[in-house]
Amino acid sequence: MSTGGDPLERIAAALERLAPPAPAAADWLAHPAYVWTGTSARAVDPLAAPPLELIKGVDAQKAAVADNVLRLAAGAAAHDMLLWGARGMGKSAMIRAAVRAAQAAFPGRIALIQAAPDESLAALLTQLRAEGRCFLILLDDLGFDGGDTGSARRLRSWLEGGVEARPANVRLAVTSNRRAIVERHMAEQDDPINPRDVVDDRLALADRFGLSLGFHACSQDDYLAIIAGYAAHFGLTFAEADALVWAKQRGSRSGRVAWQFVNELAGRAGRNL
Image (cartoon, rainbow, N blue to C red):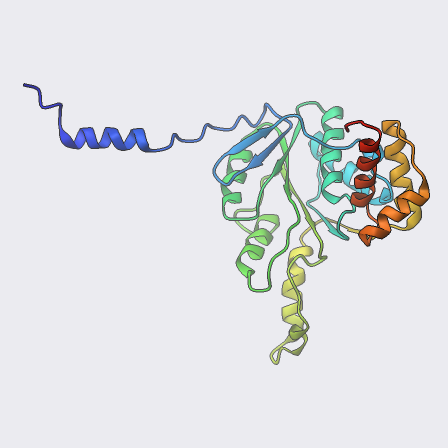
């Protein structure tokens, strides 16, 4: 009578069946964008982004970002980028739009990867180093608490000066509401040893970006211009007074609020965007 084999072998086989399969290796040449989960990459196709010409009120910032991303796609020297400032002013949308424009100019040469600034970023950089393509890694809405010095220092090392610095075919794009990214407190000014050292340590991260662009709350004219651009693109009509009431009800004027109003216009017209 058969005993069914070695019990240890049966246990090992059962454990193998229970274990999740290893994630498939990412095809870094096949898609326009990816999301890095920390252990694997999920493809994003298509890359959703507005046309660059519809991003208004931040013309100087848009020109700088678009030119820098084009350089990266062309294989030329390009900067790591920090886009900081007011919420809802299109910082991440501008990154996506610039990558799409670069992909149109240089098909297959560049991809966007959204990731988090944790320890897994080192593994991602290792994978990308050997690929025959350029990549822009987006760290969106980044901010470190005052006590989170480890994450901030890792990011500083990846940007410049560390043995794990990002490879030549990869650049980082960071969006943040704060210029220094890391929180700063008034208590820093009261440090009894050397208050300037503490402030310099906070600013050291922001200083590692070759391109740092500020975004500020838009004026009424810029807000209306953003809406007018979207409305013309989608064939919608609107009243300026209605748009201003919309912004007043939300307590701010921004590209995000403008887009929300355009979405409302499309809904009223029975259309989808």
